Image (tube, rainbow, N blue to C red):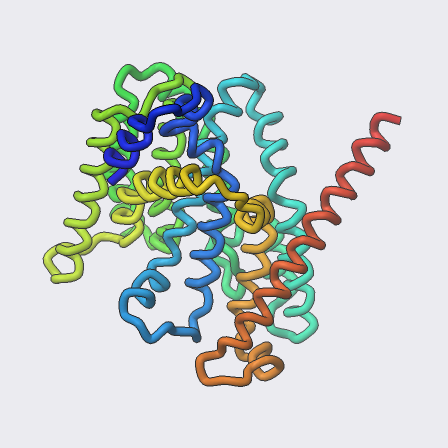
Length: 353
């Protein structure tokens, strides 16, 4: 599919040089915010646990909505590779900068929610502090929540070393491919050690490695040629084959590995589609640029369905409920995003004065 799209596009007469350059991995970078917006919509659809389309194909897409996280992870790796290579900064500076992008929104949402839970005597103060530290996930603290940000920060911490390995390697694709058995091997080892609750993190390591590989291809101006297209297509077909074996009980492996094998071709196909239609994709860009804030608030909405549903529910399929709370989700995310931006600007101005 990707191959056909690529060559059909390249075969169009009158195509400008600018459009020719906007090809392959460059489209992933050009439409990164829009792709994150699509991923956010997929995750929100997945989190609407009480809603079902009633159409098997659509419900299957909904049930695989956690694949939106794999898209986020891959696209994060894509942007991170170039940032690390260009800046060449010391690890403390690099990691502090990453934390400054993630933790303010995380602390405000998780801190406020933890305070509300504490006032209801649903968690202890200690549990709330564990959640704020982001260490709760690694120590499996009862009553804490949100695995994504702790896992993301760990991927950020590992990224500089992995980028250096990729830079030195003459076989970047093979090195990336090895992450699949490595992640699965660590997961299998974690089971007897009682650490298999970290599977959400381990399952996303391949997607992150693929994102870093795409970042290397982008920085090196590598085209999406026949060899690359065949590799991504072959990986997707292998993932589908493994999924078939899993469905028929012949092999058990996390669905995330199958999705990771398919997520690069998916992102490339979506990027081509966005480019061919030309947009504007303002709503998708909005979702992508506010994805962290939307996600953090969406997790709370998902957890508190039993409390919120009676306020808005009017039908058995909960359509009105999800339309209402998701609209509020986006509004609050925008308020949070702008508030953090304003506070950051004020702090920066104060430091300069």
